[in-house]
Image (cartoon, rainbow over all chains, first blue to last red; front, side, top):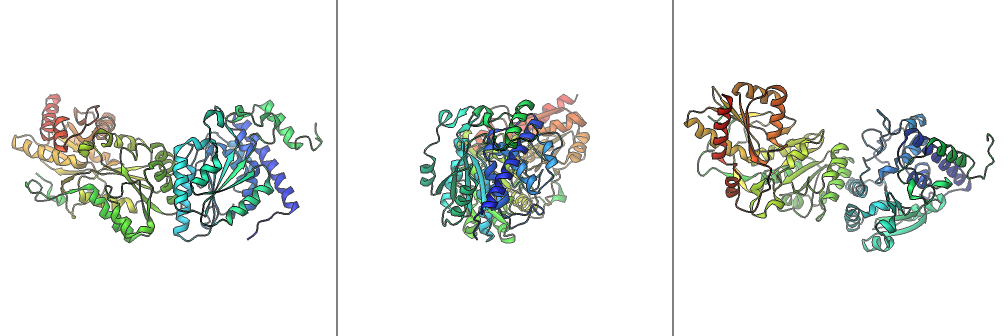
Length: 287
Length: 329
């Protein structure tokens, strides 16, 4: 089945991505803690997944034939929560409860707290293994759904990630597509300074994976990459998605200090103003 | 005397009592579960033979996953299988699983409430010549500190098989603790296994209750038999289910006897000793003595030599009973 995009669809998805960025900023400033850069950088990919690629039903999150979206780097969950709310999994209003007492929106995602999450995650390096477990179960049950696993670049410093990469290569898990957020930042700085990861493409190929590189902030290009990944046989596929951390908010872009920090109310106001005018492309009506 | 109601092994105190390793009971149950339920899958981290997962692997190759030497990967893959409807059993040595992969187990299995069964093998100093690196002596403490997990330590191969079968039908994470060497068959097929604390050695007027877990129950029973000859009446209770604990029976036994001795091949910190002490301190404090590793690692040696050196055998238990009786005065 082709999932090619029309121009109208692309415009619609880009608007959705922008709305998701606004929801991320609003929920983070309300929470008073959390991660900003990663969620903003991954907004386009989450939009593409939830509003175009995934075979899913927000009204029936346990549907057994759904595609699985497993988030390994759980700390970017504000983007997942925003996309899920916009897709109809739960009311958008509930995003204001992020990280608060009695909330279903835990600071790091917890499977049993909120239907549709698939796994509990946060501690890094574990998601790819869990995705493998799901992919193996799908194979045993002869199910045709696709298992998407979103990982970060930083968590490739965890040995567990490479244990998983080795296993998936051995088992030729072609129903598994990993999307790595290659944004080059982590808490302590730039990945290549903290602990160099390159050459990632060569490393994955050596582990038996197909590797596709793409601009992770280009929805059309990302959808094309997923189509290509789904057509790949006999191998797991890594989509190495080059993203700009903090994408959409000028003063956050490419600054690792925003990895684990939320905006304060003043910064949030500035960020929202920028997002609402699409970076100055739209003249504000209110201000 | 041995509790006649529990159908225990009538040849228990014979010199030629039948012996079998608890890990063998696990392996047999795994195959039986695999036959009964297609959802059962097994994973190991390069230890298929010594964790007795091999029979399952041979019989159900499509449901067996060899993870190589990668315990974290094994645990998290099992979590993924479980949330997709499978019933995974993961097997390794307990020093590695739940040792090396503790956080993975905590996050992806226990907190995630994934229906994974964790089999920790080669527990205790009775692992012997491999030395302290391979003797898990803190796994009970680790696992029982996690919320919403069941922790079971079978006393012999028959109970190990029953415990494994029960784990397979229970929905939720379970930790099962096994040992390497052959140990006496204390129970029989007819002995009930229901998660309660069972009195294996009974007496009319007990002055001490000995709580034992795992194969160490045998040493406690040998001690009780000799103590009876010396005119000292004790109860020996088998605590197979560490978590949840049958607190009601524990309390009634300490109330009846007024003193307790705990016996385990594990650190006394946080293990069975710590567990019984918590229950007593909260509800009914009594003098207690603790048999087990006293804040030390093990070492290489034959199991019997190690049990002797670390003060965990029959004589040590008898001395602990006598000491705790003195403390009641």
